[in-house]
Image (cartoon, rainbow, N blue to C red; front, side, top):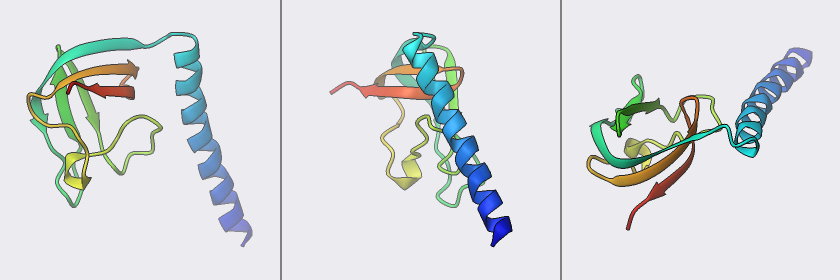
Length: 104
């Protein structure tokens, strides 16, 4: 029981620190924005074992449903919205997507 408590506390602390880092960067306006069409889209297989990736205006994004992140990580194979040629505006910190806007 003690081991489970230690693991749970460690996972919570790591998860919170990732969230806090992104939140602080956004508060300090230490983010970048890129806008354009999604190109070079490579979906993650439904079973995982590979990241989903795409490029917008020369910037490559890569993520997985299974990544421990507080940024966007909703893959197409599990219902996510990203697809080839989609017009988007992405706000990001480092390589974490903190805001995804999709044109109508």
